[in-house]
Length: 133
Image 1 (cartoon, rainbow, N blue to C red):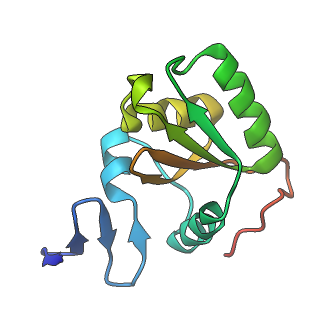
Image 2 (image 1 turned 30 degrees about the vertical axis):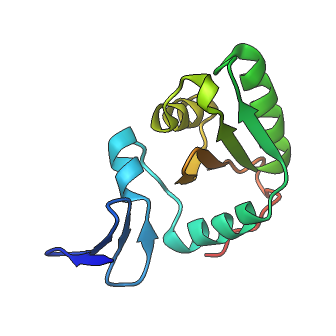
């Protein structure tokens, strides 16, 4: 159900559909204080790639340990786009985990969906994933 506001059409309080037709992850970016430099078109493209992505890192009861960050850095450098799933036993809020992961790895938050976080960081000058302009 869409609710009208003065400047935007709001859908469920998480995503905002601007009048130019782009979606922004406004709720989480504002809450986390993350400045996103990806355009809406680039985020849509990355979300599409993330849907079919098999490589998934799971945060379990160990939480955000040093071993997890080492594994996360290796996968992020190799794949550029990482899907992370938080188990309920981790005891970490999804928003808090997304903020910490993006800050420590200098990466971009693409999407938060339930207990799953999609993170992107370009590796090298050329990069593996070619983003649309």
